[in-house]
Image 1 (tube, helix red, strand yellow):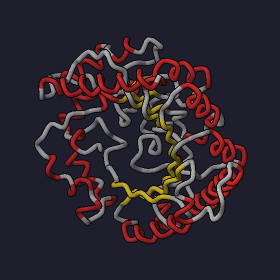
Image 2 (cartoon, helix red, strand yellow):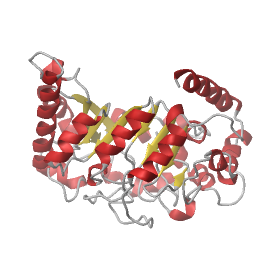
Image 3 (cartoon, one colour):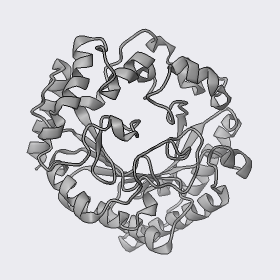
Length: 348
C-alpha cells in the first residue's frame, strides 16, 4: 500500500503540473461529510443560514466503507467534516476506526463542540483520529455568540476540557508520564487545535485566545474569515466584500482580501480539481468544499469505480478552464461561475 500510494501521489503531481484533463491518478485528499446537519446558525454559512437545498442526513458505515475501500489506499489526508457538525453523527468514531484500518491517511475532524456526550468523547479519543479542531471564534459569550449563533462558549470550554482529560487518561494508560498539560499536552494524540476565526468583532481577543490555548495544553491556530460561504456561486466577490464588511477586520494581516491583494487579476489554478475530492453524507460528489447547491454537484451519488466520476464530463470541463487559462462561455460547471465572479481568488 505505501508504494502504491507514493506512486499515485507522484503521478497526481505530474498530471497537475501538466494540467491533464483526464487523470490516471486518484485524489490524494478526500473530504467526506459525516452529516450536513448543524446545531448552530452561523450567518455566513450556507448550512447555518439555511441556503443549502441539499437533503439532510447522516452517512452510514456501509456507505462510508464503500468510499474508503475505493479511495482509501491512495489518500494522504481524510477530512471528516464540511457543511455539518460531524459529532451529530453518532457513528463518527466507528467511521474513523474503519478508515484507520483500511487507509494510511491522516484523519482530521473539526467541530463546533457545542455538543459532546460521554460516549462520543471516549469514542473520539480512542478512535485513532489524528487531529481534532475545535472551532471557537471568541473567548467570551458576547464575541462567540455574535457569529456562532445558537452556541455557547461555556459549553465549548467544558467539552474541550473533557476531551483534554480523556486524552491525558488515554496517554497515561499507554505509558506516558505526567505532567500532560501545557507543552507536554501538545505532543499527545489526537492533536487538538483551538481554531480562532478572526473577525472584526473578535480580533482584539487573539492573544488572549492564544494564551488560553497554551494554558489548556492545546495548539492554537488563527484563520481569516470569508464572506462568500453562503452565496458562493452568486454575484461578484467585490460586491460581497462591501456588503458583508461588518465581519472583516481592518488590519491588513487579518483580512484575506487585503492581505492577498497581489492575487487580483490573476487566474489562480484550482488544485482541488486534480488532488482532492469532496463527498457529501449521501455520496454526492462536489468539486470543492464551497459547493452546496444540488444543481452544482458533479455526481449525485458515489460510484466505487471512481474514475467514472473523476474523469466524467463535469470534472473534465472544470479542469479545461485552467488548461485553457480562461473560463469558457456558459454556466456549467460551477467552476466557470466561480472564476468569472472572482471567488476563486480568495477561497484559500
